[in-house]
Length: 69
Image (cartoon, rainbow, N blue to C red; front, top):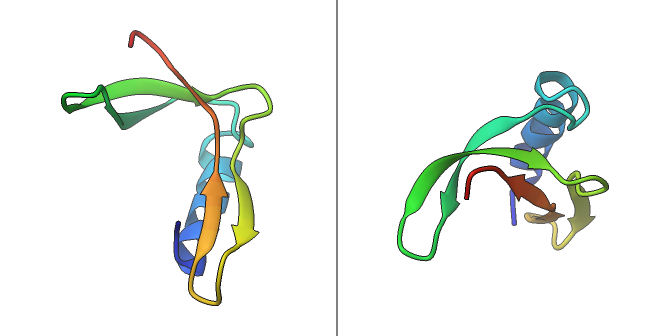
């Protein structure tokens, strides 16, 4: 869940910084015990999708590849 403003920031980041979601990026990933910094990439067909949840929230889903997990 994101605010509409945060969803717009994500859309812009995916489009411009990640080359429409094709580039790798670093993110904090939960291992089951702790968050660790990992290289990630959107899975093929796994780029973010956005759906209206309410007037103040946007539901965002995506599928990630996590490298060296």
